[in-house]
Amino acid sequence: MKKNLKTKMTGGKCLIDCLYKEGVRVIFGLPGVQMYHAIIPILDYPDMKFITTRHEQATTYMADGYAKASGKVGVAMVVPGPGLQNASAGITNAYASSSRVLIVSGQIDRDKISKDVGILHEINDQLDIIKPITKWQTRVLNAKKIPLVVKKAFKKISTGRPRPVEIEIPPEALSEFSHVKNYQKIKIQLANIDKKSVDKASKILAKAKRPVIWAGGGVNISGASAELLALAEYLQAPVLTTPEGKGAISDKHYLSIGTPQGRSTGNSKDPLRDFFYTCDVVLAVGTRFANAEVKSSQQIVQIDVDLKEIGRNHKKTFGILGDARLALTQLLKTIKNKTKSKKSQKNFFEEIKLNRYNNKETRVEPLWSYVKALRNAIPHDGILVTDMTTIAYYSRVYYHTYIPRSYFTSSYSGNLGSAFPTSLGVKIAKPKQTVVSISGDGGFLFNSQELATAAQFGINVIAVVFND
Image 1 (cartoon, helix red, strand yellow):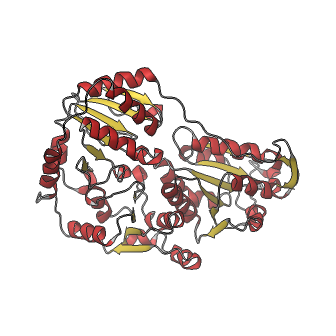
Image 2 (cartoon, one colour):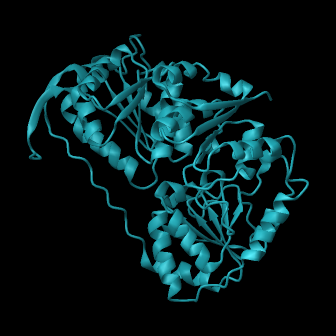
Image 3 (cartoon, one colour):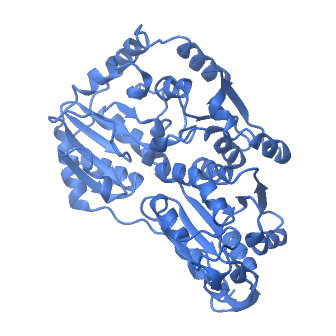
Protein backbone atom coordinates (compact mmCIF):
# COMPACT_ATOMS: atom_id res chain seq x y z
CA MET A 1 0.00 0.00 0.00
CA LYS A 2 1.41 3.39 -0.99
CA LYS A 3 2.02 5.77 1.87
CA ASN A 4 0.42 8.84 0.28
CA LEU A 5 -2.87 7.25 -0.76
CA LYS A 6 -5.95 8.89 0.75
CA THR A 7 -9.26 7.34 1.68
CA LYS A 8 -12.56 9.07 2.36
CA MET A 9 -13.95 8.12 5.76
CA THR A 10 -15.42 9.61 8.91
CA GLY A 11 -13.16 10.86 11.66
CA GLY A 12 -14.41 8.07 13.93
CA LYS A 13 -13.61 5.41 11.33
CA CYS A 14 -10.21 7.02 10.80
CA LEU A 15 -9.49 6.95 14.54
CA ILE A 16 -10.31 3.26 14.89
CA ASP A 17 -8.37 2.41 11.72
CA CYS A 18 -5.29 4.17 13.09
CA LEU A 19 -5.57 2.37 16.43
CA TYR A 20 -6.04 -0.96 14.68
CA LYS A 21 -2.93 -0.45 12.57
CA GLU A 22 -0.97 0.33 15.74
CA GLY A 23 -1.93 -3.11 17.03
CA VAL A 24 -4.82 -2.13 19.32
CA ARG A 25 -7.28 -5.01 19.64
CA VAL A 26 -9.19 -4.02 22.76
CA ILE A 27 -10.68 -0.72 23.92
CA PHE A 28 -12.11 -0.14 27.39
CA GLY A 29 -14.89 2.40 27.49
CA LEU A 30 -18.29 3.64 28.55
CA PRO A 31 -20.39 4.80 25.57
CA GLY A 32 -21.82 8.30 25.48
CA VAL A 33 -23.36 10.62 22.93
CA GLN A 34 -20.15 12.45 22.02
CA MET A 35 -18.33 9.17 21.28
CA TYR A 36 -20.89 7.18 19.26
CA HIS A 37 -19.17 7.93 15.94
CA ALA A 38 -15.92 6.50 17.34
CA ILE A 39 -17.49 3.37 18.82
CA ILE A 40 -19.72 2.24 15.92
CA PRO A 41 -16.78 1.77 13.46
CA ILE A 42 -15.29 -0.84 15.80
CA LEU A 43 -17.90 -3.22 14.34
CA ASP A 44 -15.93 -3.12 11.07
CA TYR A 45 -13.00 -4.84 12.81
CA PRO A 46 -14.14 -8.32 13.93
CA ASP A 47 -11.03 -9.01 16.01
CA MET A 48 -11.26 -5.74 17.93
CA LYS A 49 -13.19 -5.76 21.22
CA PHE A 50 -14.94 -2.93 23.01
CA ILE A 51 -15.20 -3.75 26.72
CA THR A 52 -18.05 -1.76 28.25
CA THR A 53 -17.46 -0.94 31.91
CA ARG A 54 -20.01 0.16 34.52
CA HIS A 55 -18.06 3.24 35.59
CA GLU A 56 -15.51 5.41 33.77
CA GLN A 57 -13.05 4.86 36.59
CA ALA A 58 -12.78 1.24 35.52
CA THR A 59 -12.00 2.11 31.89
CA THR A 60 -8.60 3.54 32.74
CA TYR A 61 -7.88 1.02 35.50
CA MET A 62 -8.51 -1.79 33.02
CA ALA A 63 -6.43 -0.07 30.35
CA ASP A 64 -3.65 0.33 32.91
CA GLY A 65 -3.81 -3.35 33.89
CA TYR A 66 -3.81 -4.41 30.26
CA ALA A 67 -0.78 -2.23 29.51
CA LYS A 68 1.18 -3.41 32.55
CA ALA A 69 0.61 -7.09 31.85
CA SER A 70 1.08 -7.02 28.08
CA GLY A 71 3.62 -4.26 27.55
CA LYS A 72 1.30 -2.91 24.87
CA VAL A 73 -0.76 0.28 24.82
CA GLY A 74 -3.99 0.14 26.82
CA VAL A 75 -6.75 2.30 25.35
CA ALA A 76 -9.64 3.89 27.26
CA MET A 77 -12.52 5.83 25.70
CA VAL A 78 -14.79 8.16 27.68
CA VAL A 79 -17.12 11.11 27.28
CA PRO A 80 -15.87 14.59 28.22
CA GLY A 81 -16.42 16.43 31.48
CA PRO A 82 -17.62 14.06 34.21
CA GLY A 83 -16.60 11.03 32.15
CA LEU A 84 -12.98 12.10 31.91
CA GLN A 85 -12.95 13.27 35.51
CA ASN A 86 -14.27 9.90 36.65
CA ALA A 87 -11.51 8.24 34.64
CA SER A 88 -8.83 10.42 36.22
CA ALA A 89 -8.24 8.03 39.13
CA GLY A 90 -7.08 5.33 36.74
CA ILE A 91 -5.06 7.86 34.75
CA THR A 92 -3.30 8.88 37.96
CA ASN A 93 -2.53 5.23 38.63
CA ALA A 94 -1.06 4.80 35.15
CA TYR A 95 0.96 8.01 35.49
CA ALA A 96 2.52 6.90 38.77
CA SER A 97 3.20 3.42 37.37
CA SER A 98 4.77 4.65 34.11
CA SER A 99 2.11 2.79 32.17
CA ARG A 100 1.40 2.92 28.43
CA VAL A 101 -2.19 4.19 28.41
CA LEU A 102 -3.98 6.21 25.73
CA ILE A 103 -7.16 8.03 26.74
CA VAL A 104 -9.50 9.10 23.96
CA SER A 105 -11.93 11.64 25.37
CA GLY A 106 -14.87 13.31 23.75
CA GLN A 107 -15.51 17.04 23.71
CA ILE A 108 -18.55 19.24 23.36
CA ASP A 109 -19.48 20.78 19.99
CA ARG A 110 -16.35 22.47 18.70
CA ASP A 111 -17.94 25.90 18.22
CA LYS A 112 -18.97 25.92 21.89
CA ILE A 113 -15.65 24.87 23.47
CA SER A 114 -14.59 27.36 26.18
CA LYS A 115 -17.79 29.39 25.68
CA ASP A 116 -19.30 28.32 29.03
CA VAL A 117 -22.78 27.94 27.55
CA GLY A 118 -23.88 25.03 29.75
CA ILE A 119 -24.03 22.30 27.11
CA LEU A 120 -24.11 18.61 28.13
CA HIS A 121 -20.82 17.46 29.74
CA GLU A 122 -19.22 20.86 29.27
CA ILE A 123 -16.20 21.62 31.38
CA ASN A 124 -13.81 24.48 30.71
CA ASP A 125 -10.07 23.92 30.36
CA GLN A 126 -10.34 20.13 30.15
CA LEU A 127 -6.80 19.83 28.78
CA ASP A 128 -5.44 21.80 31.73
CA ILE A 129 -7.30 19.57 34.18
CA ILE A 130 -5.75 16.41 32.73
CA LYS A 131 -2.27 17.90 32.21
CA PRO A 132 -0.73 17.03 35.63
CA ILE A 133 -1.45 13.30 35.17
CA THR A 134 -0.55 12.87 31.50
CA LYS A 135 2.72 13.01 29.60
CA TRP A 136 1.06 14.75 26.66
CA GLN A 137 -2.46 15.91 25.81
CA THR A 138 -4.04 17.51 22.76
CA ARG A 139 -7.30 18.43 21.03
CA VAL A 140 -8.19 17.46 17.44
CA LEU A 141 -10.77 19.71 15.80
CA ASN A 142 -11.08 18.03 12.40
CA ALA A 143 -10.90 14.50 10.99
CA LYS A 144 -8.00 15.21 8.64
CA LYS A 145 -5.57 15.67 11.54
CA ILE A 146 -6.50 12.47 13.41
CA PRO A 147 -3.79 10.23 11.85
CA LEU A 148 -1.05 12.75 12.64
CA VAL A 149 -2.21 13.11 16.24
CA VAL A 150 -2.54 9.34 16.80
CA LYS A 151 0.98 8.85 15.45
CA LYS A 152 2.33 11.50 17.78
CA ALA A 153 0.46 9.97 20.74
CA PHE A 154 1.97 6.53 20.14
CA LYS A 155 5.42 8.04 19.73
CA LYS A 156 5.06 9.85 23.06
CA ILE A 157 3.96 6.63 24.77
CA SER A 158 6.71 4.54 23.19
CA THR A 159 9.74 6.78 23.74
CA GLY A 160 11.34 7.94 26.96
CA ARG A 161 9.39 7.25 30.12
CA PRO A 162 6.05 5.63 29.23
CA ARG A 163 3.16 7.54 30.72
CA PRO A 164 -0.48 8.21 29.77
CA VAL A 165 -1.36 10.50 26.89
CA GLU A 166 -4.77 11.98 26.10
CA ILE A 167 -6.51 12.96 22.88
CA GLU A 168 -9.83 14.81 22.95
CA ILE A 169 -12.06 15.02 19.90
CA PRO A 170 -15.35 16.92 19.47
CA PRO A 171 -18.28 14.99 17.94
CA GLU A 172 -18.18 16.83 14.57
CA ALA A 173 -14.59 15.71 13.98
CA LEU A 174 -15.71 12.11 14.52
CA SER A 175 -18.82 12.27 12.34
CA GLU A 176 -17.60 14.34 9.38
CA PHE A 177 -16.09 12.76 6.26
CA SER A 178 -12.62 13.65 5.11
CA HIS A 179 -9.93 12.35 2.76
CA VAL A 180 -7.24 11.06 5.11
CA LYS A 181 -3.85 9.52 4.44
CA ASN A 182 -3.51 5.78 4.92
CA TYR A 183 -1.98 5.29 8.34
CA GLN A 184 1.48 3.76 8.73
CA LYS A 185 2.47 2.22 12.06
CA ILE A 186 5.21 4.11 13.86
CA LYS A 187 8.74 2.72 14.00
CA ILE A 188 10.58 3.25 17.26
CA GLN A 189 14.32 3.08 17.80
CA LEU A 190 15.66 3.37 21.33
CA ALA A 191 18.12 6.17 21.99
CA ASN A 192 21.79 5.23 22.24
CA ILE A 193 23.45 5.03 25.64
CA ASP A 194 26.34 7.43 26.28
CA LYS A 195 29.55 5.35 26.22
CA LYS A 196 31.44 7.68 28.57
CA SER A 197 28.71 7.34 31.19
CA VAL A 198 28.79 3.55 30.89
CA ASP A 199 32.59 3.53 31.17
CA LYS A 200 32.61 5.65 34.34
CA ALA A 201 29.79 3.62 35.91
CA SER A 202 31.63 0.38 35.15
CA LYS A 203 34.73 1.69 36.93
CA ILE A 204 32.69 2.54 40.02
CA LEU A 205 31.09 -0.91 40.09
CA ALA A 206 34.36 -2.72 39.36
CA LYS A 207 35.99 -1.08 42.39
CA ALA A 208 33.03 -1.70 44.71
CA LYS A 209 33.76 -3.86 47.74
CA ARG A 210 30.13 -4.80 48.30
CA PRO A 211 27.84 -3.75 45.43
CA VAL A 212 24.08 -4.16 45.59
CA ILE A 213 21.44 -3.71 42.89
CA TRP A 214 18.13 -1.93 43.57
CA ALA A 215 15.74 -2.93 40.78
CA GLY A 216 12.56 -0.97 40.10
CA GLY A 217 9.62 -1.15 37.75
CA GLY A 218 11.75 0.13 34.88
CA VAL A 219 13.43 -3.27 34.67
CA ASN A 220 10.11 -4.99 34.01
CA ILE A 221 8.90 -2.26 31.65
CA SER A 222 11.99 -2.53 29.44
CA GLY A 223 12.15 -6.34 29.59
CA ALA A 224 15.59 -6.27 31.18
CA SER A 225 15.34 -9.24 33.57
CA ALA A 226 17.88 -11.42 31.76
CA GLU A 227 20.36 -8.55 31.52
CA LEU A 228 19.85 -7.70 35.20
CA LEU A 229 20.54 -11.28 36.25
CA ALA A 230 23.64 -11.57 34.06
CA LEU A 231 25.18 -8.46 35.62
CA ALA A 232 24.19 -9.49 39.15
CA GLU A 233 25.79 -12.91 38.74
CA TYR A 234 28.98 -11.46 37.26
CA LEU A 235 29.40 -8.98 40.12
CA GLN A 236 27.84 -11.28 42.74
CA ALA A 237 25.70 -8.30 43.61
CA PRO A 238 22.51 -9.19 45.48
CA VAL A 239 19.29 -7.73 44.10
CA LEU A 240 16.71 -5.80 46.09
CA THR A 241 13.48 -4.89 44.35
CA THR A 242 10.87 -2.23 44.81
CA PRO A 243 7.25 -3.46 44.88
CA GLU A 244 6.96 -2.41 41.21
CA GLY A 245 10.19 -4.27 40.45
CA LYS A 246 9.05 -7.58 41.92
CA GLY A 247 9.56 -10.39 39.43
CA ALA A 248 12.53 -8.70 37.76
CA ILE A 249 14.55 -11.52 39.32
CA SER A 250 13.05 -14.77 40.57
CA ASP A 251 12.84 -15.00 44.35
CA LYS A 252 14.10 -18.56 43.97
CA HIS A 253 17.50 -17.24 42.86
CA TYR A 254 20.02 -16.86 45.66
CA LEU A 255 20.89 -13.31 44.55
CA SER A 256 17.30 -12.17 45.03
CA ILE A 257 17.24 -11.07 48.65
CA GLY A 258 13.83 -9.42 48.70
CA THR A 259 11.95 -6.15 48.92
CA PRO A 260 12.91 -3.91 51.86
CA GLN A 261 10.19 -3.01 54.31
CA GLY A 262 8.70 0.43 54.02
CA ARG A 263 6.85 2.53 56.53
CA SER A 264 3.52 0.97 55.52
CA THR A 265 4.45 -2.46 56.89
CA GLY A 266 4.51 -1.08 60.41
CA ASN A 267 7.86 -2.72 61.20
CA SER A 268 11.08 -0.74 60.90
CA LYS A 269 13.34 -3.54 62.20
CA ASP A 270 14.15 -5.19 58.89
CA PRO A 271 17.43 -7.20 58.72
CA LEU A 272 17.54 -6.43 55.01
CA ARG A 273 17.91 -2.73 55.76
CA ASP A 274 20.87 -3.49 58.03
CA PHE A 275 22.55 -5.45 55.24
CA PHE A 276 21.83 -2.73 52.68
CA TYR A 277 23.72 -0.18 54.77
CA THR A 278 26.86 -2.35 54.62
CA CYS A 279 26.95 -1.97 50.81
CA ASP A 280 29.23 0.75 49.47
CA VAL A 281 27.87 1.03 45.91
CA VAL A 282 24.20 0.83 44.90
CA LEU A 283 23.19 0.27 41.28
CA ALA A 284 19.64 1.62 41.02
CA VAL A 285 17.86 0.51 37.85
CA GLY A 286 14.52 1.93 36.74
CA THR A 287 13.47 3.28 40.12
CA ARG A 288 12.70 6.73 41.52
CA PHE A 289 14.73 5.71 44.57
CA ALA A 290 12.32 7.74 46.69
CA ASN A 291 12.06 5.38 49.68
CA ALA A 292 15.55 3.88 49.67
CA GLU A 293 16.72 5.84 52.75
CA VAL A 294 20.32 5.76 51.52
CA LYS A 295 23.26 6.74 53.70
CA SER A 296 25.29 9.75 52.63
CA SER A 297 28.41 7.58 52.37
CA GLN A 298 26.88 5.25 49.77
CA GLN A 299 27.67 5.85 46.10
CA ILE A 300 24.70 5.52 43.75
CA VAL A 301 24.89 4.57 40.09
CA GLN A 302 21.42 5.22 38.67
CA ILE A 303 20.07 3.98 35.34
CA ASP A 304 16.85 5.67 34.29
CA VAL A 305 15.07 6.62 31.10
CA ASP A 306 13.83 9.84 32.73
CA LEU A 307 16.55 12.45 33.25
CA LYS A 308 14.48 14.16 35.96
CA GLU A 309 14.72 11.08 38.18
CA ILE A 310 18.52 10.77 38.09
CA GLY A 311 19.92 12.12 41.34
CA ARG A 312 16.55 13.50 42.41
CA ASN A 313 16.54 11.70 45.75
CA HIS A 314 20.25 11.26 46.50
CA LYS A 315 23.03 13.77 45.86
CA LYS A 316 25.89 11.26 45.55
CA THR A 317 24.60 9.83 42.27
CA PHE A 318 26.21 9.09 38.94
CA GLY A 319 23.64 8.62 36.20
CA ILE A 320 23.20 6.71 32.97
CA LEU A 321 20.32 8.04 30.90
CA GLY A 322 18.50 5.48 28.81
CA ASP A 323 16.57 2.25 28.50
CA ALA A 324 17.37 -0.23 31.29
CA ARG A 325 17.91 -3.22 29.00
CA LEU A 326 20.31 -1.40 26.67
CA ALA A 327 22.19 0.20 29.56
CA LEU A 328 22.62 -3.06 31.48
CA THR A 329 23.80 -4.85 28.34
CA GLN A 330 26.48 -2.25 27.67
CA LEU A 331 27.41 -1.99 31.34
CA LEU A 332 28.10 -5.73 31.62
CA LYS A 333 30.10 -5.74 28.39
CA THR A 334 32.27 -2.88 29.66
CA ILE A 335 32.72 -4.32 33.16
CA LYS A 336 33.95 -7.62 31.71
CA ASN A 337 36.85 -5.68 30.21
CA LYS A 338 37.74 -4.17 33.59
CA THR A 339 37.38 -6.95 36.14
CA LYS A 340 36.95 -10.69 36.42
CA SER A 341 33.68 -12.23 37.55
CA LYS A 342 33.36 -12.52 41.30
CA LYS A 343 33.37 -15.84 43.12
CA SER A 344 29.92 -17.12 44.08
CA GLN A 345 28.67 -16.04 47.50
CA LYS A 346 25.58 -18.22 47.36
CA ASN A 347 25.84 -19.49 50.94
CA PHE A 348 26.27 -15.97 52.31
CA PHE A 349 23.22 -14.56 50.55
CA GLU A 350 21.04 -17.56 51.32
CA GLU A 351 21.88 -17.11 54.99
CA ILE A 352 20.77 -13.47 54.81
CA LYS A 353 17.45 -14.55 53.33
CA LEU A 354 17.01 -17.32 55.89
CA ASN A 355 17.69 -15.01 58.81
CA ARG A 356 15.25 -12.47 57.47
CA TYR A 357 12.34 -14.83 56.91
CA ASN A 358 12.91 -16.61 60.22
CA ASN A 359 12.91 -13.34 62.12
CA LYS A 360 10.05 -13.26 64.67
CA GLU A 361 9.36 -9.60 63.96
CA THR A 362 9.05 -10.42 60.27
CA ARG A 363 6.35 -13.04 60.72
CA VAL A 364 3.47 -10.79 61.67
CA GLU A 365 0.31 -12.85 62.03
CA PRO A 366 -2.14 -13.40 60.51
CA LEU A 367 -0.54 -11.53 57.59
CA TRP A 368 2.35 -13.96 57.21
CA SER A 369 0.01 -16.95 56.97
CA TYR A 370 -2.31 -15.18 54.52
CA VAL A 371 0.54 -14.26 52.18
CA LYS A 372 1.98 -17.76 52.40
CA ALA A 373 -1.43 -19.26 51.61
CA LEU A 374 -1.82 -16.97 48.59
CA ARG A 375 1.59 -17.92 47.23
CA ASN A 376 0.90 -21.63 47.72
CA ALA A 377 -2.45 -21.38 45.94
CA ILE A 378 -1.43 -19.17 43.02
CA PRO A 379 0.42 -20.98 40.20
CA HIS A 380 4.08 -20.25 39.50
CA ASP A 381 3.20 -17.87 36.65
CA GLY A 382 0.09 -16.46 38.32
CA ILE A 383 -0.39 -12.71 38.67
CA LEU A 384 -1.28 -10.85 41.87
CA VAL A 385 -2.83 -7.37 41.74
CA THR A 386 -2.85 -5.52 45.05
CA ASP A 387 -5.00 -2.76 46.52
CA MET A 388 -4.41 -0.36 49.38
CA THR A 389 -5.02 -2.67 52.32
CA THR A 390 -2.92 -4.14 55.13
CA ILE A 391 -2.49 -7.56 53.53
CA ALA A 392 -1.36 -5.89 50.30
CA TYR A 393 1.26 -3.79 52.09
CA TYR A 394 2.63 -6.93 53.67
CA SER A 395 2.61 -8.80 50.36
CA ARG A 396 4.84 -6.14 48.79
CA VAL A 397 7.62 -7.42 51.01
CA TYR A 398 6.87 -11.09 51.67
CA TYR A 399 4.97 -12.40 48.64
CA HIS A 400 7.44 -14.19 46.37
CA THR A 401 7.45 -13.65 42.62
CA TYR A 402 9.19 -15.72 39.98
CA ILE A 403 8.61 -14.01 36.63
CA PRO A 404 8.37 -10.41 35.39
CA ARG A 405 4.98 -8.68 35.21
CA SER A 406 3.45 -10.97 37.83
CA TYR A 407 2.84 -8.49 40.66
CA PHE A 408 1.16 -5.10 40.33
CA THR A 409 0.52 -2.18 42.68
CA SER A 410 -0.83 1.35 42.25
CA SER A 411 2.73 2.63 42.82
CA TYR A 412 3.02 5.92 44.67
CA SER A 413 -0.51 7.09 43.77
CA GLY A 414 -1.92 4.60 46.29
CA ASN A 415 -5.37 4.39 44.72
CA LEU A 416 -7.92 2.75 46.97
CA GLY A 417 -10.22 0.45 45.00
CA SER A 418 -7.91 0.00 42.02
CA ALA A 419 -6.99 -3.68 42.30
CA PHE A 420 -10.14 -5.41 41.06
CA PRO A 421 -10.74 -3.38 37.87
CA THR A 422 -7.00 -3.38 37.15
CA SER A 423 -6.98 -7.16 37.43
CA LEU A 424 -9.71 -7.39 34.78
CA GLY A 425 -7.43 -5.60 32.32
CA VAL A 426 -4.55 -7.87 33.34
CA LYS A 427 -6.65 -10.97 32.69
CA ILE A 428 -7.67 -9.77 29.23
CA ALA A 429 -3.98 -9.31 28.42
CA LYS A 430 -3.03 -12.70 29.91
CA PRO A 431 -6.09 -14.96 29.52
CA LYS A 432 -4.15 -18.20 30.11
CA GLN A 433 -2.63 -17.10 33.42
CA THR A 434 -4.33 -17.11 36.80
CA VAL A 435 -5.03 -13.54 37.94
CA VAL A 436 -5.87 -12.73 41.56
CA SER A 437 -6.75 -9.38 43.12
CA ILE A 438 -6.56 -8.68 46.84
CA SER A 439 -8.61 -5.86 48.37
CA GLY A 440 -9.97 -4.72 51.67
CA ASP A 441 -13.75 -4.83 52.10
CA GLY A 442 -14.04 -1.05 51.76
CA GLY A 443 -11.72 -0.71 48.79
CA PHE A 444 -13.42 -3.50 46.88
CA LEU A 445 -16.71 -1.60 47.01
CA PHE A 446 -15.19 1.29 45.05
CA ASN A 447 -15.46 -0.80 41.88
CA SER A 448 -17.53 -3.83 42.87
CA GLN A 449 -19.98 -2.96 40.09
CA GLU A 450 -17.36 -4.26 37.65
CA LEU A 451 -18.35 -7.78 38.72
CA ALA A 452 -21.06 -7.28 36.10
CA THR A 453 -18.41 -6.41 33.51
CA ALA A 454 -16.45 -9.54 34.41
CA ALA A 455 -19.56 -11.69 34.12
CA GLN A 456 -20.66 -10.16 30.82
CA PHE A 457 -17.31 -10.62 29.10
CA GLY A 458 -16.22 -13.83 30.82
CA ILE A 459 -13.19 -12.28 32.55
CA ASN A 460 -12.35 -14.99 35.06
CA VAL A 461 -10.47 -13.15 37.79
CA ILE A 462 -10.28 -14.38 41.38
CA ALA A 463 -11.07 -11.50 43.75
CA VAL A 464 -9.96 -12.04 47.35
CA VAL A 465 -11.57 -9.59 49.78
CA PHE A 466 -10.27 -9.19 53.33
CA ASN A 467 -12.52 -8.08 56.17
CA ASP A 468 -10.20 -5.45 57.60
